[in-house]
Length: 87
Image (cartoon, rainbow, N blue to C red; front, side):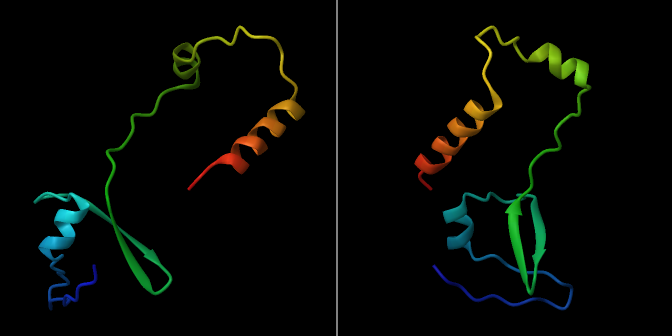
């Protein structure tokens, strides 16, 4: 789905309805504008996440109660997961 639109003198762009519908962007959708080289990328903005302290994070994460795992074993498993990951 390709569409052509124009940049107004006020810097406004109309995103065609078929594109908005296909992306599920309702009226009033807040978008982030990201400059990437000579392009502009629009994506829905994500709400700002609340920051928490390390202590609060530590309290939220359950304590690991399994047997010890070496760094080499973790690295190997991550490599296996990455190889099997389908995009």
